[in-house]
Amino acid sequence: MKKRWVPIIFIIAALILDFWVFDLLGITKYAPDCLTAVFAALALAYGIVPMALSGLILGLVIDAAANPYVGWTAAMLALTALAGGCLRGKYFADNAVIPGVTAAVLVFLRENIVYAFCKLMGRQVTGYAALLGTHMLPSAILTGLLCAGLYLIARKGGTPVERADMLRQEED
Image (tube, rainbow, N blue to C red; front, side):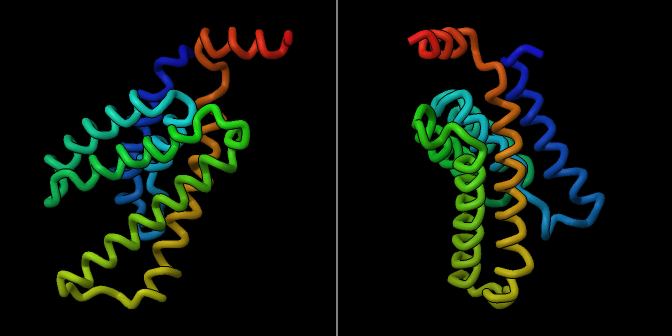
């Protein structure tokens, strides 16, 4: 499979899982955030700019179609790509742990922001401890695990330029 198709396949699979499969199974409360996992993994494998632009555009489309707060998903996907892509090329980030932790932390922070906004707006929400144990932590952990696996798949093979650079480094 050509490397250029990997992001498209990952994003389509994440959309299907997030918006269809998890709803059918009734596990949206505990499910990983597949789009966040995909964008964090792909940003590390492909770079900030292409994934941040893709996240911004895809997020705006999702927000326009399914979200009353236009811009929220777009901003979160772009920030996810930014956070993941900032680690690209760092010696300590060339493993599955760093992208997984990045995605898990981003999901956890996003859920805390959503909780704080809901409280500020006066909405009735479950207590923080209950929400932490039943939604925030399971979702963050599953997202991190998914992202780690996706990163290992996404970086496999590399682009021709990356492979040439890797070969040159091995020769030195």
